[in-house]
Image (tube, rainbow over all chains, first blue to last red; front, side):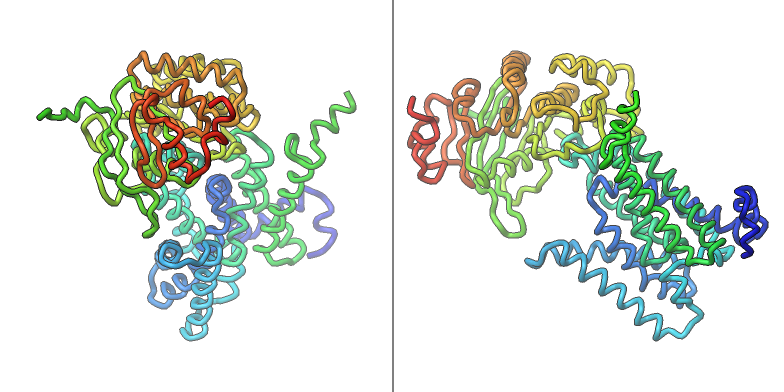
Amino acid sequence: MELSSFLTLDSFITDPLTHGFMRKALLMSSLVAAVCGFLSSYLTLKGWALMGDAVSHSVMPGVVVAYALGLPFSLGAFIFGVGSVALIGFIKQKSRVKEDTVIGLVFTGFFALGIVLVSKIKSNIDLHSILFGSPLGISLSDVKQTIFISLLVVILLSIFRKDLMLYCFDPRHAKTVGINVFFLHYLLLTCLSLAAVVGLQSVGIILVVAMLITPGATAYLLTDKFDNMTVISVLSAIISSLIGIYVSFWFDLETGGSIVLAQTFIFLFAFLFAPRYGIFKLKKLFAGYK
Amino acid sequence: METINYQNFRIDAENICVDYNGKVALYDANLRLKPGQICGLVGMNGAGKTTFFNALTGFVNISKGKIRINGESVRSAQKDQTIAYVPQNEGIDSQFPISVWEVVMMGRYGSMNIFRCPRESDVQAVKDAIERVDLTDHLSTPIGNLSGGQRKRTFLARAIAQRASILLLDEPFSGVDIRTEKLISELFIQFKNEGKTILLSTHDMIHVREFCDLVLLINKTVVAYGETSEVFTPENITTTFGGISPDFLFGPES
């Protein structure tokens, strides 16, 4: 890119939009960010960050197998995502090994299986795009799948948002008043697997966990209201996606990495300057000037 | 021979056992409570108090025995909003971004539609409950900004809003201020008069003497059960606490 072309903010924003693939990337990544951001509030509050890491890595062999069999890759990813969680639960129950250890060994095992499968199945699977995402090279069938899955997750989360909030907050009470906790547990896991599937297109398998935890963590520092937390989480995820894609376009950087870095910077900003919970507490700083 | 009418008992737990992956947490435990009775659940840490609560609420499955709530299964008690559980302060995430109003509204979830949209009656029930625990000034306060006593009252309000006939309270007096302790005491008397059945776990022997009609002493199983005056003897307490002298627990007065 010529340096002169982004001397004005206007052209910085509008120039990339002249490319079809950029418009698609911006739209798709925003959608994916919104879905992951929505789910992120729940995962942060439930303390499922590690679970998000596990599921997102475990979908790898599913993606490869699905590609090899000509199935929608979301299906394979989903089966392996939920399967990994079931396996984690099983090993934890049947052995004396601690949960974080079990999570770590199961997801790395799945991930390794995925990598081995890629090398064995000589297909047109692009390992690089699975690992690091390829929002700029997203195909039309992937677009349809992403839209479908995203809508499904958003609808499910919207319908059960209060129940899920209760499940994260006090599952015992949920059970006591006759709410199906088992269902909510697997609903959240299902949404997690699906979000990991759409998220990996944007930022890749390795970094998708950031999409699932960073926006929620940022929002958690900024508000004491659950509804606000969801909104902030979604917004910060979308903004990060946009920033990441623009920056990667102008400076020729890896897109997935740029998106996640943008999220990390927003988190750091909240960490330092959040009105109530930040290290420097903006409110106090401004109060000094009154 | 006298036939027992199980309908008379709010809670009827018979020889219940609970194990976690083969590790026994509670065995052969029995408990029968009628409307208007307050029962203290006393035992060491790890004696199975929380497990007992979990079994009654259906949060864990019992491996043996039978639990009847108002003569019916735990499952239908859940559906009927019969049991309310008030957790220990330590048992909840106080940093969760949720307000007093939202917590108390959760008491109504079981009787709402799937979207949990509050009806006029739900709003009224929540308002009344919050008023009864004297937190009307804190409707929109996040629970993280409340004192331990206020938080305890919030969860009591949730139980009140639920309109349950059985209240299970895990350490209701731990970590609360004097004002809250007084308010809870008064509520207990009101609940008793309303015919509610209360089962509360406590470490505080004085509270048992003060409020409880009945005492259930447990140490993985029932050590003793009955009227407080009869059961709450130094010998039984010594057994319950694995040989620690009751003088130590009661102080020099007893």
